Amino acid sequence: MKKILDVNAHLHTPYSFSAFTDVKQALDLASKEGVQVVGINDFYSLDGYREWSEACAERRLYPLFNVEFISLNAEDQAAGLRVNDPNNPGRTYLSGKGLAYPVILKGKEAELLAGARAESNAQVERMSVKLNDHLQAVKAGFTLNFRRIVQDLTRGSVRERHLAKALRLAVEAKFSRDTDRLACYERVFGGKPLSAPLSDQAAVENEIRSKLLKAGGAAFVPEDPTAFLPMETVCRIILAAGGIPTYPFLADDTKGAFTDFEGDLQRAANTLKKRGIASAEFITTRNSTAVLEQYSTYLQDEGFTVTFGSEHNTPALEPILLRTRDHAEGLSDKLREINYRGACVVAAHQAGLSSVEEGDALIRKSVGEPAC
Image (cartoon, rainbow, N blue to C red; front, side, top):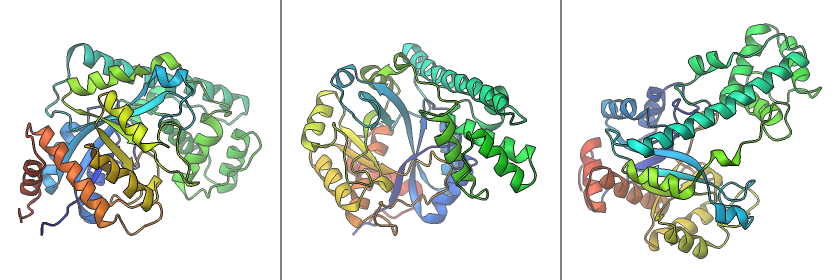
């Protein structure tokens, strides 16, 4: 019996925002944890592909080349249908799996991708202006330099999480004593104390983001709905880049609830097929094992390519070896097999091959695993 290889097909890197300091750290951790197939999956960016490919080759890991977008489906928005953004009807996250490397995207589609990233960056810049106004109003004793944030903390794509990180770093640079840092956060948070321990950098950044940058926060700036590309356009960009349009399922949340779109799995699958999407993915720590097995098995039986990932697009440095919400030790063998089969399909697609078996052989040869 062939060994099932472990896969993490959705990893963000510092080319968007990531828990990792660099690509090498991500892939060193993957190697250490025995994850042999790894997919880069940054927002609006293909810039990390070369570094990802070279670093994977050095470690005998198999690279998958992916990308992520936020799109808008006008039909779902008009119907008030929550898709895979639980707070914004019609707003739909989409990934592209198995894009061509070297990159082939050019022309109108390349311009659309660049425009989407530019608008995303501009949204965060508007937020930084509002954040600086707030810092001055509460007499924080410092402001943030957006250009320096882009230069020092990003690889070209800037997210609101970069603002949260920059604010934490600014507080630490300005004040040396914990009591002064806590007092600063309390001023900045409008009189509310910092709940997270100062030593937990990820928790501090998450709290900054929650209290200042999200809806209701002093630096919140609503996103312009017209800035999101239509779902059909995003699929066109993914196809032009050689990829597979992929729908990221949220599935069950911690209360066992589903979005309007995903609650009826059969209807969701049929709708996705009608929209030309026959690939799905899950971020496994969001889900219970039972629901993840139910959803992924159904979708695979319906002809979908199914892959799993961890994202790592928050400050928290969590394991790369996948696990579910209720099983910290890892995925069940059933889920590992579904994930590896999906990765074989994506690998075959990347290489211009046509079968799961060819993808399997390609991966095993690359990572040094025997064919049987």
